[in-house]
Image (cartoon, rainbow, N blue to C red; front, side, top):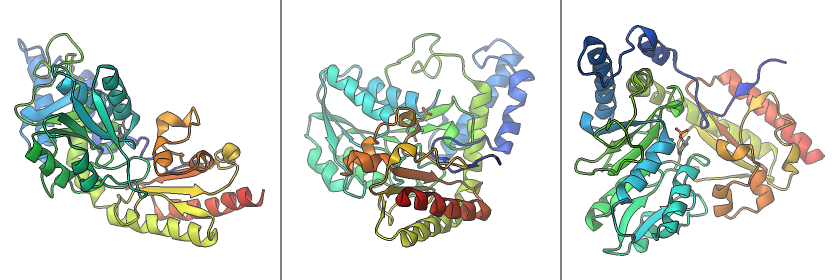
Length: 378
Ligand SMILES: *Cc1c(COP(=O)(O)O)cnc(C)c1O
């Protein structure tokens, strides 16, 4: 069998060759510990880390000191939320019911510590509106709001800039998980949140590196104790080669972004072909007018989902977030949109990349028409 074609870039991406090349010297030639301030080897590593920090800071119009390196978005989310609230008397916090598990589980943990958590319900299209956020704020009581920029299953975009303004007005710290927004949309058209999480392996860096942008003046309570790296907020020897890679990925973002118009055409084409071919049987999830171009989410209404992925071995697609895939749990995001469990399970998430070609899309469309056709005739 030809190797399967990959349409699961929202789960992870391959390392960009330019990124790989940039990190190579830091495995063996420049191998110093960035914390070794006494000698040349340490200085070299330190300089490489600081250059990457600057590359990332520039993207966010931030100062280098605001960039903190972590192992990925999961750790960034944990550190941002728990690290900020750690020293406060439990009060009220707000998130949504369609966050990634790396945020949802943190809020569940906060509940056990005595925090009152409001889980905002999305619209039927999977958005968190400014009004619903405003109504949930308890003046004086609400200490933090965490809302994802782009939903990883639906691709829908939340109104992060106006919510950031609202939080400033109320003196509430605002965190966003921007993992699926970086490199997919321009994030600079308004105020930014106080805390921004992102991950390397969703933007063509290796797995195991991520970051957090921290507004000046905010000190996070460390979750890892040790040598006091990263301004005492995240101990551990810096992963120099991963950090260099992440810096290069940020330099490369315009290259990826320039392909988004092409992906939008692919997105439209796939949806149009499938929905017209299977008239009345498929449901598109998310807001098709307000989303990133690389994610498509389609429910096959009333099919037997048990064999769904087994009949499609030549393509790699998912039915939601990768973390759920092995357990075959119904997606909490689709359930929050009001889907029945069976329909949530018979849902396909297709995610694209600047690497996706027209030939890939032609293959995907024909293949899905054939395989979905089999499922409906079974
Ligand atoms: C992939 C993803 C994460 C997890 O990132 P890791 O770097 O793998 O920990 C968190 N949030 C969103 C929205 C994601 O898509």
